[in-house]
Image (cartoon, rainbow, N blue to C red; front, side, top):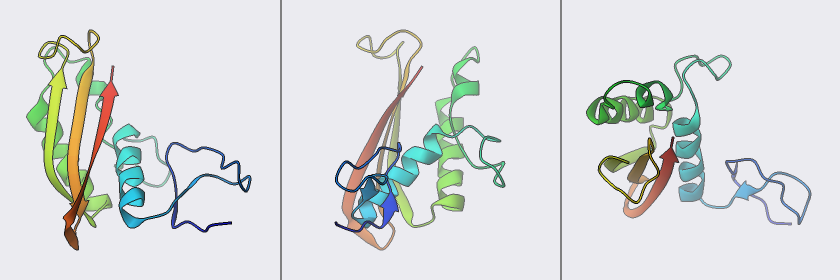
Length: 128
């Protein structure tokens, strides 16, 4: 049995030991935690009502404000995941990219661990 340093998100059962699938590296843990932050709606997490940046409310506005979302995301990462350094955030809507389904927003974030700027990773999520 190999030990992990965190729990992978989304929760999955690890068939080798019956427990939740674990993250094995700091970068993998950071990626999982960033994904969790992006998928959480503000007010959804107990004892941390300000945690989360799920763009649900912005998706149903007349115009999705990508710059406001990027600013909110950067503030949330600085507050709740200060060990992550955001390199770039790209937001693409279905109006800009015809390969996306209608009313879908694609968010791609390039990041690194704050103490290890030479180790980069990215996370891509589709909302809609």
